[in-house]
Picture 1: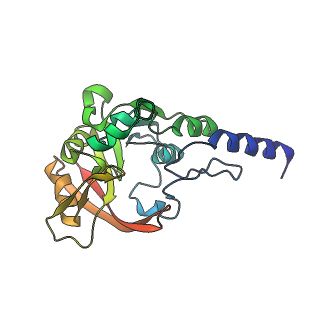
Picture 2: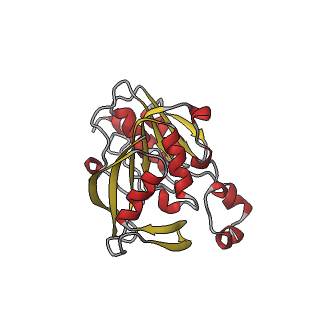
Picture 3: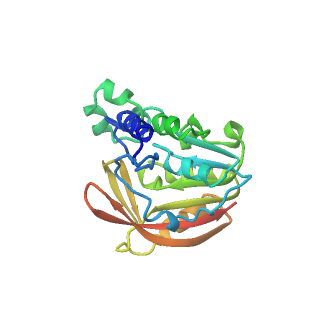
Length: 244
């Protein structure tokens, strides 16, 4: 390894240290962030096109920005990434919120995004915006909208889906968790206790919710599993193309 590459590697490593990463992101020079989820092995299971040249795309609930940077890498003309600004803006259970200090509540959500953005030399535009406030009046419309593993973390997933539909021009790529054990039209309420997870959906419930939020066409593209690294648990996911 040349001295220049080693210096770059050390700089990147120093920048990513001390951050609570959600996504593992390849930052080049052999530096990969730690994270709760590593999507590299299942990236092809997410129904995003191999190329996005000339398209305006949106990444909803971007957090560290993994999918936003990936869509940029695939040639999108413009990538906008939205998420809440502070942990206090998440759909936290009231009893969890009460236990958190003001400093914890005010700490940034997706602290790794600006670091990865700088290292990658990215042009992705991040907007501090909740999916509950997403609208064409705020951001316009997008050719492709990506929503990954978000609905289970929301008090009101139908409202979020309706807002996503309102800004979708061609189609939305929606991938979320579901349970293979639940009966067909069932969703289980889990009280937000485990990392703000409020719901467990059956596959059919997840699919029908997307349609009931306003999408005219909901097409299953893939079923796959994603590993939660800290617990080594695998979570079933379904990936859809939803067209307004």
